Length: 364
Ligand SMILES: *Cc1c(COP(=O)(O)O)cnc(C)c1O
Image (cartoon, rainbow, N blue to C red; front, side, top):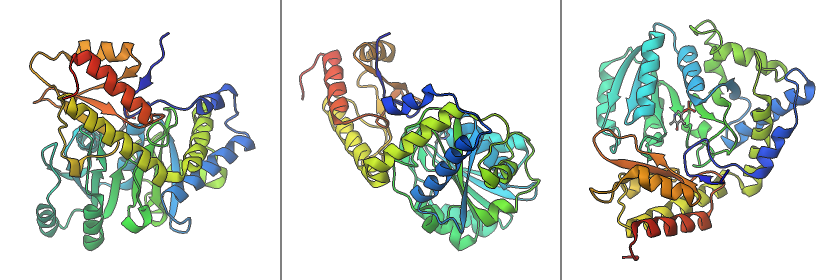
């Protein structure tokens, strides 16, 4: 099979050494394996700048959505009320979960290329004292917009609300001090900026909040409290865990630290993203999100002209070594390019050359 690099926001291209960790079969009950789980939990706390006195980490089987749902079903009881702030489909997915679970919530949504308005949020919070939790996606992977987590964090502190952040596609690739931000539940998964393979997600949770959640969950397998109770004893997961994925993830974290931690990885992603946006702009592709709001993770581009055919473009670029990502906007023709994973400046330069060839144009 022809090899290619994934320019998608997870699963993404991983290193050979991360993949190699999966060549050994580990036992889910064995102490060696439980030690890996405990090591990961500790390293994640460090990456989040969160102290073990106040925070804990829970790993959860499944894709990222399973982990988000485990937080939504566990962190809120039937009397609580969430203010769910959305500007994309991942936020909207959380609203859908709230419906499935039967949670009380208010949905505040803004345009996909806009930020939530602080004054409007203040007014909602001033007028609805039933709200107990604020929920927002950090990097909305739908468009690549990086939402203002500092502003929401300030609101959560001022109004004393529990703060849930879906940082799935940003944690590990964007610097974040979870403790200073006062995030109560930060959610991410193995196959995004930590650069592991898919199979589980994780939650960095404020301990006093999580310990108060016994009995809230309406799902057995997604009960984050129960999972934590078991895992916190000695690193044993409830039910079968994705052993190969966990071993690969442990290696991926070590490689993140060796790269220079999140600050260094964030710089690499930013550089990738800047080169990508500049390169495509020169070829006639405009980004949907403005520079100030753009994340260093994934970029949405508008079709360059009315005759552009994404399927044809996609196949051409794939044959030349890169897999892109279709767009997710309903009202506009777009596609997306991720720049996370084992992706470096030279890859972005090569991609820009491939796209230039496809467009059959000289650099403007
Ligand atoms: C990837 C992602 C998820 C989880 O998606 P899965 O397909 O379930 O892994 C959730 N939220 C955001 C913002 C994401 O980028």
